[in-house]
Image (cartoon, rainbow, N blue to C red; front, side, top):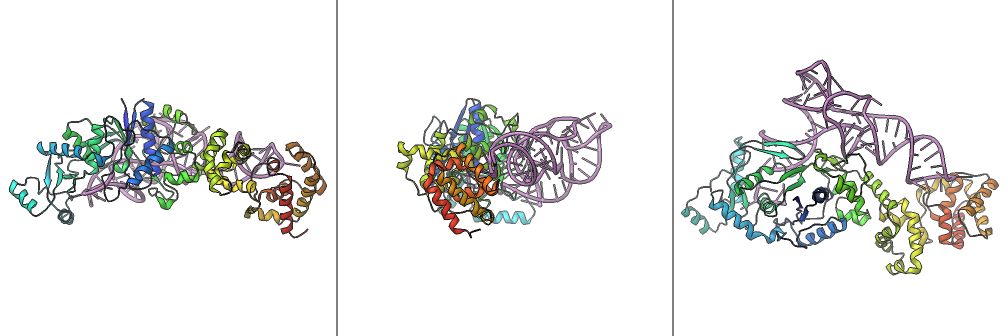
Length: 487
RNA sequence: GCCCCCAUCGUCUAGGGGUUAGGACACAGGGUUUUCAUCCCUGCAGCCGGGGUUCGAGUCCCCGUGGGGGUACCA
């Protein structure tokens, strides 16, 4: 039975890079009809905050990644937050001490640091010198009397390790790479490299997918598995996600947290689809893949071992694709908060059956011009407001000496047109206007579009006119005309 | 310092000894839409460098170079 996990630490906003590994772990578990677990690694007191745990769970749910066991849903291997598993870590630490695999260390961080500096200066590997490894009872009592609180150190094995990593291949850790390392801090909290092993072992995790920033540390973990007499899980270390400057993707590159992508209105399935392409490729090269397809196509052997640069343009392309393809009803639900956010329409109106048809119609018209739902606002404005802005791209067309002529003709034609405006009627009107004034193509169409919407791109005018009504349309044309020098 | 990982178009990638090195995003041009978007077609552009191994190396080996990570009582 395949069991994978996502084990974030609640020290900040959920990062896309972490979500990518979570996605792969999720896909692998689902593909093999196994379980995916969520575990909170909150043993760093300084940085962990409970609010981030709540936020994290909320963001993961928004993404649609669901877990079979976790802090909120429980499960047979709980608890699922490390801060609640302290007794377990101590129990196993005691076992290791009893077996001579670990010992109390009374050295202060300052003492350890000083010794390290000295060894570095002497050109030796800066490992802990093991001075507390064989303390006598009376030495220990002396330290205790001084008020020192001991940490627990693991006795490192002096041997080489070979890891068969599913993405990196065979990785050899030479003998003597690590010295005795702390597994329980003097404050009683476990250190990552220890807790992760105890948890993965007890939670029966079979496959560990994570960032390759953990690769070097794996040797410590292998030692602990060995001391436990346990078989390590299969490891897969993914290269990190980078920014355009090839540095680890961070806030200074722009949007990186799920929170932000969410606020911008990227459909979650689009974001996951994009993320799946970062370090993985489908066997047939297709790139637009639904969650179901991802689950069935995913496999570890197609994971890439080199770092990937996050391409915001490609994300936008995928996102737009999803926005266009999505069933209108579903998109509407998703878009409501973005409509409300503009302040131009209330949630009640959006749910009002009498008005819903209108708003849904508008959404359907403008969805094709948006990369994310936050972009809807730019097109929504000319349906809901008369004070919409004229975008700068419009300037050259307003400066054309044919523009006033075009607008006047449009005004007249519109005023005199008694029929309901639809595609045919509009084409009819346009045809005769173009003939009459001798202007065609974009020099004809764009001024009309600018007058009605303030923009040089957007839905067909003949779709917009019936929605805003003739009266407003006439007024908009006149308003723009008034700002132009008469030619 | 020591150790580990990585290296194909600008970007994501396919390709694992014999390929005109394939696809996607972006970009450029064309077609459709009398405009923009969508859609379709075309183009641009790549195997980090040097040595091996081999009849033959993006592909295997070694050495550089560059980038990343670790060497924590961070994760």
